[in-house]
Length: 105
Image (tube, rainbow, N blue to C red; front, side, top):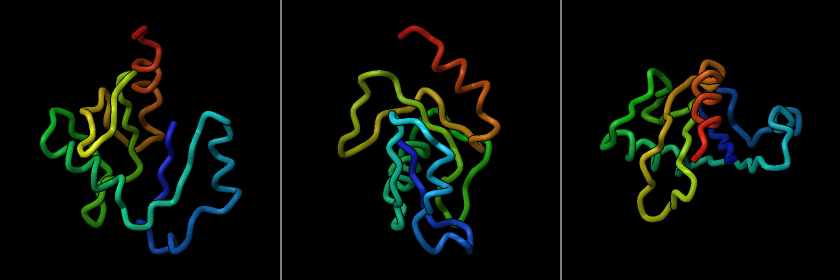
């Protein structure tokens, strides 16, 4: 799992502290700070041209607070693959996440 932290709110002036990072306390999670919104911009590009459009989660022109799930074997390159789930806010996607992740690929 990749968790991307980015500055969106006025209080987001620096990378997340240890307390915030501990919210995703699982060794399979990779977290990083994306101050230039590079990942959000790449996901937005796919969202605009793709079939999935989140019910929320855009601020200052950037997608944020959403979950994106990709099929096993999906490769990120010059362009991102189409996700199988793209929605948020994350806290409201638990049922959808469980359904997608429980499928046998």
